[in-house]
Length: 270
Image (cartoon, rainbow, N blue to C red; front, top):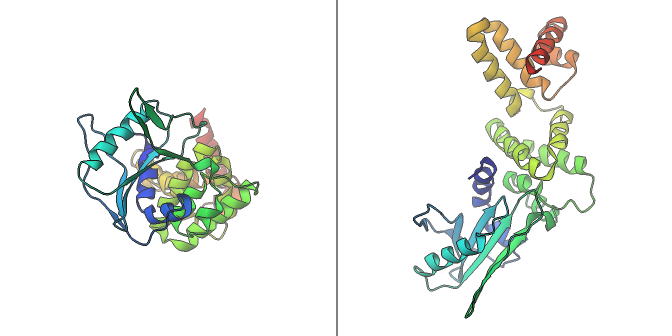
């Protein structure tokens, strides 16, 4: 299970009702997550299993890669879930992968056909998630179809709304998710630009700044605490803001010293 899978599943677990309403087009008023882990010997667990209005069981799998064996996995999940409920079961794969969807959605044998549903997030209108206006839905919107809208403008809006809807810790958490998922759509450059352009944000709230500060604090043990922390601050900000004068203004560190430390950072990367 990759890092992106873990992040995406954590987000989608909080969005079951919204996914059902806005993506799967299911009329739903109440969803109850089922705690039971449908686990087999190979340590496979269903991502989301929920009772929808006591009418049917909704089973969602979040998939980041094409998997030729996915139909067999889904069929196993179906039999596991069916063994503990009499309700009908609706199964969906939510595909968030970078590559073109190529997984089959059925198993066919001599005497039977088993079939489930695959939702390709690249084909979902991003407005369906943006209008939900929660941090989780806004993060997921980056995986969807922008419908010809300017990519930078959409991402700038997403980042701005996440900032407005969250506290400092929440903002860092969701921006990290956004950065991770942006790689699936080759939008990492636009996300970084969106972070830079949102100038009203305190740079200390950004995850890359915090990471740089922590790195600087660690190096400070070897090189002197004050010098190490200064370098960490600059290293974190340099990921977002290339202008030494601006970094100097944000950190209070002399511009000449900022330029000197940036050159050190560049040499270490080479």
